[in-house]
Image 1: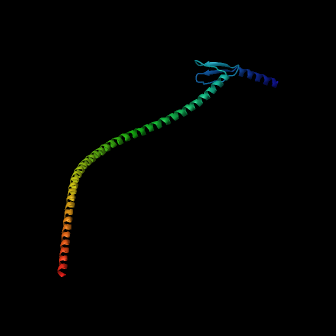
Image 2 (image 1 turned 30 degrees about the vertical axis):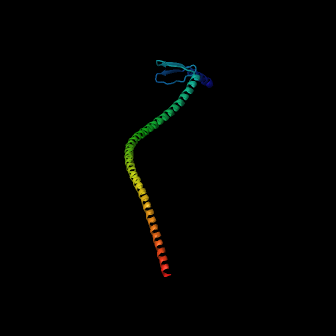
Image 3 (image 1 turned 90 degrees about the vertical axis):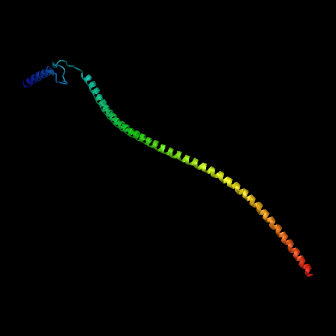
Amino acid sequence: MKIITILLLFSGFCLSANAQTVTFQSDDDKLMIFRGATVEIDTDTAYIISSTRAQKLNRQLDELGQIKGIYNQLLTNRNKLLNELTAIEETLGKVIVRMEADSGFLNQNMADIIADIDQTLLELKQNNETLATNNRALTQKIDKLNHLVKALRKETRWIWWNGLADKILVFGAGIGVGALAVLILL
C-alpha cells in the first residue's frame, strides 16, 4: 500500500507539474515553459518562439557580438588613423610655415645676392672701360716706342757707318803714315 500511495502521489505530482501555471510579467526577459504548462501573461505583449528559432536567434546574437567586436576594433583603428592624420596635418602645417619662412628668407637673400651681382657687374664694366682706356694708351705708347726703336736703329746704323768711315779713314791714314815712314827710312 505504501507503494500505491507513493505511486499516486508521484502521478499527482507529475500531473500537477504538467499542469503547472506560470506567470509572465512585464519585468521578465525570458521564460522557459514545458509542454502542458499553463502560461498566464501579466503584461501588454509577449512573444512565444520555438527552441529552434531561439537557437537561430542565439547564433545571430553571437554573430552580432562578433560583428560588434570587429566594429569596435575598426572604430579603434579609425580613431588611431584620425589621430595620426591630425599629427601629419600638424606636421605638414609646420613644414608649410617653415617653407614660407625659408622662402621669404631666400627671397631676401636672393635680392641681396642680385644686388651684389649688379654691383659687381657695374664694377666689372668700369674695370673694362678702364682697361680699354689703358689698352689704347698702351697701344699708343707701343707705337711711339716702335717709332723710337726705328729711329734708334737708324741712328745706330748712322753711328756705325760713321764709325766705320772713321776707322777706314784712320786705317787709310795709318797706312799712308806707315808708307811714308818706310819711304823716309829707306
